[in-house]
Image (cartoon, rainbow, N blue to C red; front, top):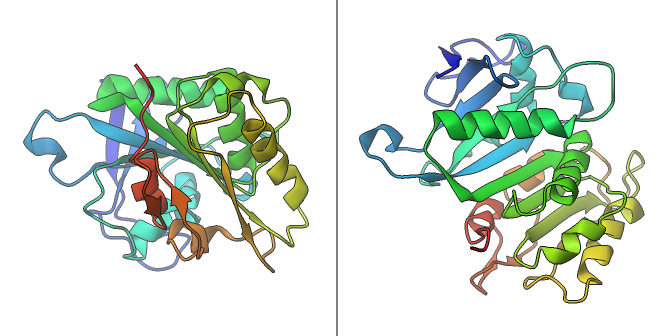
Length: 257
């Protein structure tokens, strides 16, 4: 399968011990190494599952070793899992790769290689691939949506920004729910709002308008309130219903045939 799985029975950043049922460390020969959580019941059948890929920020970069990759769980869904705030009923495969190097961005080709490797090794529904990331990772989420139209069914950029996004104008089915602090001094709120406005200005526009949750009085480090669904907002899913749970919202989207 081109990868080795190591169960993490280590500590996270020399703090609380992590139970090994939360997630695993996967050392891949064909992609970035990553943390992985398989949904309950994965080994009991042949069902294909949606995939959520979480892209960390600048402060969590590392060489992908078993020790370094623990930083991926400092924020985001893996942090929620460790803290006991994860909904075990979610039918999601969750993967969190780690990137290294000196550059302050994610090479989008490395993310795509990781998604390809995941699809080769696990039963993933190719129409239900979701991306989320914070700061540097939020920028990467937008970049992949721009450069590889149709690969993701829905995205959640957190404190992210984007450049030219004309390519997304043809993605009527792409779900977008962005989050940004009003007092973000690292990535200005206006820079996070620009791609939302540009996408909604497309003609025709997305079937579900892209939505920005403005976190009033919040600075750049706003991750936990979002990934633990304490953000206080709601957004329309592809089924027309309102959701305050970002993961349940994601699950309503799929790439069109």
